[in-house]
Each structure stands twice: as structure tokens, then as C-alpha cells.
Length: 159
Image (cartoon, rainbow, N blue to C red):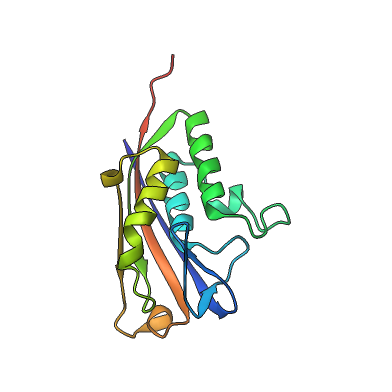
């Protein structure tokens, strides 16, 4: 078994859609980013890649025309395929979203369902939490949203 950690943060901008955990959330601002800016999924991707010793999200999905505006869930699907081609499988994901606004708890069950399906895990094997920084820092001032993630992976038996 191996463990990896991931972290991502993006600034919030007006007139952009807010996407977290593959869910579009109604909010006055959205996350800036080359893809859809989904910091939760980006942190999860980095945690999985780190656990497998396969670098980071920027190495595999650099800012390019090919990746511009791409759904982070599509990047997660490609990451799962990359892990499988290297004989790894994800056994668990745990993440925390750091945001002052909007309130995210109503969206977390659906985020978990979507991500669990993509990474081929059961609902309870993908955990997502949300917290604030009580007004402190970039996230506390509502200038951005961050996410931390931890992944566990196991080597698959080869035939």
C-alpha cells in the first residue's frame, strides 16, 4: 500500500462557473483555471499520482489548448487509466475543501457519488469534508478556494 497527498488552490473570479467535485454550484464567482478549475478533483489527482510516484497533474495535463476548459472529471478518468496501466488501484480517497462561501455540505454526497464511480470505489471509500478558515487568509477573505486530499493505493496482481 502507498499513500499520497495533494493540494490545490485557485482564485475566484466573477462571471465564471463554480465547479467542485464535478458539480456545478450556483455562486457569484467561479474558480479560475486552465481546465474547469475544480480544486477538489485536482488535489485528488495529485494525491493519486503522488502515491504511485507518477509526478503531478501539471506533468500529465499541462496548460495547453488540448486541456483548455476540459472537465476535471475527464482528467480524473485519465489518471485512473494511467494508474491501472502501471498496475495500481485506488483503495481510498479523503479530501477537505477550504472555502468561506458557498456552503458546500448540501453538495458533498453527490460529489462523493460522482468521484467514487470514476475511481471505481464504494461511496464510503471516498470521503469529502468542507471547512472554513474563519475569515483568515485567501480562502477566508473569499478570494479563492483550496482543497487537500489523501489517496491510498495498492499494487494490483499481474497475470
